[in-house]
Structure formats: C-alpha cells, structure tokens
Amino acid sequence: MRTLRGMARKDGRVERLRVGVVGAGYMGGRHARIYAGMPDVELVAVCDAREPVARELAEATGARARTELGQLLAEDRVDAVSVCTPDDAHLDACVAAARAGAHVLVEKPIATTLRDAEAIIDAAERAGVVLLVGHCLRFDPRYDHARTAVAAGELGEVQTISTRRSNTVAAQDRLGGRCSLPLFLGIHDYDVLRWLLGSEVERVTAESKWGLLRGLGYPVEDANGALLRFANGALGIAELNWVLPRGFPAGGDHRADIVGSAGSLSVATLETGLRQSNQERSVLVDWGSAPIVQGQAGGMFANELRHFVDCIRRGSTPAVSPADALAALRIALAVERAAATGDAVSL
Image (cartoon, rainbow, N blue to C red; front, top):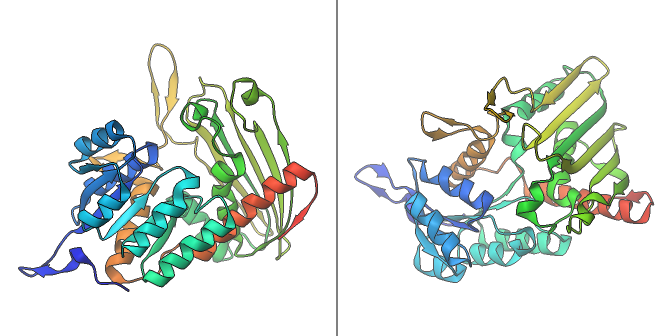
C-alpha cells in the first residue's frame, strides 16, 4: 500500500491525513463537515464544477475551493478523497483519484453499471489504495447490533427479512428524477439483506408503480417491491417508495424486520425518542444517523468516515469490500430488470 503524504512523523507525532471532497452537494457537505471536525485529519480542499457551491462549502469548513479534480489531485497533495458526485460520475473521479495515489471513499452505489464498478475496483487494486464504498447502514449501531445478533445465532435460522425504505416527495427537489429507486434507496437494503444473512441472492422478482412523480415532472417510479430468494433458503422482501407527503414528520421511514426460528428483531428509525414541535408541525429527529453532540459529528456517517481514515492509517481491510459493493449493485440492477420485464431474474 502506498506511503501516506500526511503520515510522516514530526516531533514524535503523526501528521494529519490530508483529505479532499469531490462533489459539494448534500453528501459532500456532510463529508466535509465531518472531516473538518476530525483532529487527525486536515480537510485540504473541496471540489465542485459549480464554483459558488464549492466556495460556499470551502468557506464553511476552512478548506480550499477547487472546480477541477485534476487541479486538486495535482496541487493539493491529498492522501485521500471522498467522491460524492452524482452516481453516474463516480467512474472518472474514482479512477483519477486512484491513479494519483489517493485512497478513495465513494458514496453508494459504487457506480450505475457493472462495467464502471469493475473499472473503479481495478483502478484501486492497481494503485494499491484503500477503496471504501459508503454503504452507511453497516456503520449504524442499530443495524450492526442486528448483524451481531444474527451471526451469534440469537434468532435461530433466519426465515424472512423484510425492509422498508420510504422517503418523502421532497427528495425529488434535490434529486430531480436523476436515478431509480433500486439504485438510490434500494441498494441500502439489498446490501443489508445480504450482510445480515451472509448469503447470496439467487433470484429476484419485482414490481414498480408509476404515476404520481411522473405527473410532477420527475421521470422515476413512485414505489418498488422486490422479493429476493437467497441461497440459504431465506426470503428477503424489500419495499421502497419516495412518495411520503411533504408534511411527514421525518425525512423518511426506514425499518427492517427479521424473523428467525428462535426469535425476531426489528430496527425502526422513526422510534427515535426525540420529537420537536412548533406551531405548525412536529418533527421526529433521527439521532442515530448524524447527530451533533457537544459540537462533534456522530452517528453512522461519522463512524463510516472514521473507519475509512483508520483503514488508511492501519493498512487494514475495509468493512465493506469492493466485492460487497459489486454484489449490491448487481442486485439493484436485477431488481430494475425484473420490474421492467415482469420476469424473475437469476443472479
């Protein structure tokens, strides 16, 4: 693995890891703010083709603003980057970063095609850099507990896992219909189902519902339901939609229900224990994902970025392997195909 520019010792101390963020939108802003609060990390630069967007985030986090990735890689001497661009732009950014010798954390999905995903993985392997794909639920303490319970046999032999991932119509204000439900939301749960069960998907059937969002000008489905048959005999059920009303008290309703031969377990993100109200509405605050405690970011996103930094420093293997990310993408594409054709798809 390559030598880190930011790891040279000086006065007996380890220098801070130099990091850049590519894509200054919603997730890029989250990554930048988390890095800026890490004592052993220096957020060097944020990059976005939209100069005002890059400048605003840079000023908020004490970083340098860039509009070209090549300039960031050539001049800012970064050890690592977070790639938070739109999904279909992951390939060029990840490959360029890896070839420049920078470790890569890329938001999920790794790419929108298997060919692009394999090219990203190949570039990282050839460069000898860490590649972590941001399947963030693996860093949520609630889902991690579920995985531990299943692995320990506390639920017996798992029979079914059903997941629901519902977002509000307001999600399209940001996304503008640029990606499908399986690729944007479903891939979270396809990865979790596979991770919890420790088994591969053999066959997928799926249906999509269209109409409401198309009527609002967004060329995407309203809802999708998929059945996933696993090699170990378990049945996975993944329900998706992004048509919850704008007045819903949270950004989404996400849950997982596991039924085993000796027990069951449920994860429900709406059961937060934190409700805030004003004269117009009540809001349920999800403290598990991205809380700020005493001015410091916590939750699954902070856990994920901390894991990325630790993997670089220690030379350890990421908790989400490139093969895991490729498998989740393969399932998402199979769900898309099954819903489009009405046929079962074998993997």
